[in-house]
Length: 375
Image (cartoon, rainbow, N blue to C red; front, side):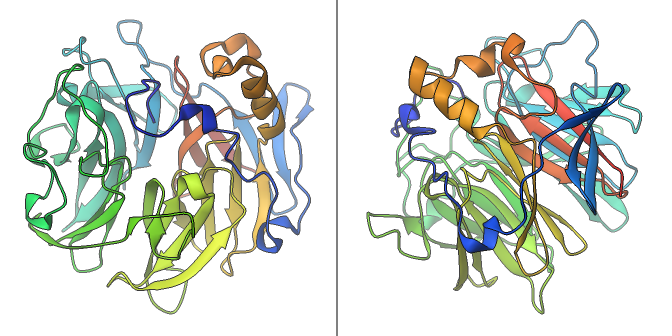
């Protein structure tokens, strides 16, 4: 999510429109606040306890975080972080790589500066590859190897018939950067078992696009929601993931502005809607557990039956009160107001092989937090 107000929905509604009450599926266990043991901050309880390590990876001094967005872990345990970046700083990388100790390894991806957003890792034939989504001036998606070599990059699927002329072209200038339902502003990607993948056009057409293994457009599903909030319609389908925890794999979509997750078959047929979130931004799974980063200051963990088992780092009430008082998002730009063990705006989260969770927050100075698993 960008701090720039160029799209057609009101950022003043960011917290006002969020559903702060929860449905029964999300309300059973009590949320646990952070507590300190000596110098250690712990969130969660029972089988879901984590040590909080804010600002876990450190950038070399020659780089700066420019609104962190998403995270992914490869098969070797390396962490990849993408930030939005600044179009005017075209030589600055947008993707950074860290080892298991949080030490900087390498960086690349300057071609996504001004629009870096989604990043996922897929192992194909024993080799890891990165799939990147870029919005704003860089509206496109791409495949790279883990050293940063670009294999291909694509703009809007014009054959879908929903985009304005020229939406397959990038980059754009800040002055020529229109938003709307006939624009292409992809946010995240999810991988199909057959080698294909889905791309969520979260800020543009509010569609989910399907591609084959070679990156050719196949089909689409979904459409913009109206006031009925009908199943299968979206109001900012920001996150996307293949949920393999059930009898058959389903695609789950974080329908952010409607505070819900929706599940579909791989053919795009609606199966389930779960309400009660606070602007869900994306998902990840490990075993029977799903993590949902919510932009209104918390993480939610769901079990295999999609029952809430933990809320982590919740600070929603304070963030909402501040937004109402100031009419803006000043906390995200003022680190002195950030509280240990509390989140501001979780934008993405992912598990590593040991069950630790990495969180990228939509904050101006950037913040990547590691939740070290204790159970």
